Amino acid sequence: MSDQKSLDIKVLGDSAIIIKLGEGIHPSIHQQVKNLSYLLDEYPFDGFIESVPAYNSLAVYYSPYLVYQSMNGFQIDGTPIEKVTDYINQLAIQISDLPVTEGRVVEIPVLYGGEFGPDLEIVAETHGMSVEEVITIHTTPEYLVYMIGFAPGFPFLGGLDERIATPRKLTPRTSIPPGSVGIAGKQTGVYPLETPGGWQIIGRTPTDLFVPDMSPPSLLQSGDKIKFCPMTQEEYDEQKKVMTCQ
Image (cartoon, rainbow, N blue to C red; front, side, top):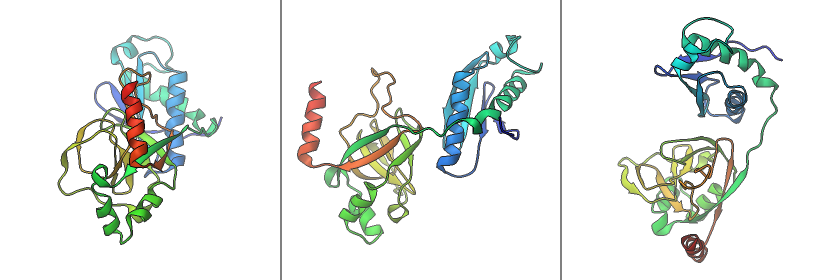
């Protein structure tokens, strides 16, 4: 085991805490987040409900009543939050001993521009480049899924090239169609469901990112990677037709 300082743990309501494992957005920090989430899933304490990874932090939800009732699994007597905090600090000693994990690489086909990507030309004009250059830059990297949130199945991605980083729209749209691919600052993401939103919309994918009947319902999980691939209108229509017939 390696040495580990006490974690930066803060209260998040009466039945949850949030653990910060670093500053900023970086894959190595997120690896620590995933490792602690893994350890809690493998070695849960009595009353543990779930953990939710984010960019550089992990939210842990628990039942204070079950923690209070538990006579085993904790090294100290105290309030539920004191027991949980002590347990997680002890568990976190193993964080650095876990191997680096590689998530799946999921290809997301995207029809860029036109009515499906009404802000693509705005992004191109903002940076003094052609729409083709924006598409090439956007489809080059593999994007790490740091967290799922905002809407069911919505992936917050890291790794957007700063050359096409573009501020959110000053006035958000009241409705964005599902599958829309957007840019906001140094982030890019995909709207799985129809929602309001202020991201610059550059394209749309026919791939469903959230299906309630699937298990799990979200196509993507924290730690996965996305590779965007350009597709033609004919390919989009064909894939949408196949999905409609299923």
